[in-house]
Image (cartoon, helix red, strand yellow):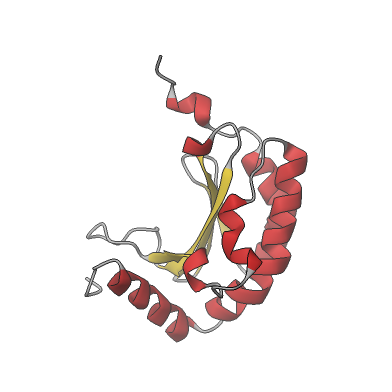
Length: 152
């Protein structure tokens, strides 16, 4: 039996994520739009933060976070324009395992988004988007680590 991809989507993700994260990003000058799976893509100048989830983990969803440079999470060549946030977090930090913070309900998601905002976005991502040169360096380091050697 096959599952229709639409059945894997989380219908409450955009509403709850905007409720928890929307004002924070808006107050810092970010514009917001939804991704095709209902994640949130925050854009300010050339910096973006994507907060989403992995539909393939249905029914117990796993959050995803990417920060990068550009207007999309992939550049014109199809290479990543960003870096998964776990790559940036300290190895010994509990927050590095955010992708294991699973949610099935609106209440679970609200708690997880609050943790993401207060334990990841404010502490690790905001300082990084304020230092675009450092962010570019982190993206380049990530690309090199996965075998993409130049930024074309």
